[in-house]
Length: 113
Length: 114
Image (cartoon, rainbow over the protein chains, first blue to last red):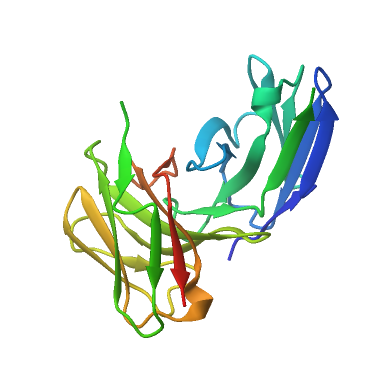
């Protein structure tokens, strides 16, 4: 089945700096790659997603890039703010069942004021 | 507004007890999911359902069962709770169809099995 690896597990940045989180996946048939943000005491919430026919997608301070050849995708957050502090999860669609997502292990991002 | 609710935020049970975790969505979604979340392991899929009375095993179904009698409600059952089932349980739903799409999560139930 699909395997998704996520790095780093923890990341601290100064407010205003950029943050990058990277994920690799194993199943070359995967074609949907969402990113979720989980704030303390809440369930994960989608922040951005990308499908395999697109190499990059941007939404204000957040961008995701996808390299299908290398089977990796990354989340980029620019001009980080304290409210960006949260756990971030990447995910990939499983080839066996397109409804399913396989999640990475998560990255705890801390933005220092 | 999209809403997924879970019956309890915190639950404490004894080893061997039967435990029911309830999830309700008000978005008329076809698909519903149960995950468990453990530190360093991310979210792991226990079971999912793509229609009423339909269910499919996820990656870690052992020790769990599910029930979906109505479209809006998806229940996770621990037949005989064990200490290694202490975890955060997250329910999610998505619109429907075979294409992977946005999943909407509930706030989670933190279960402690003593």
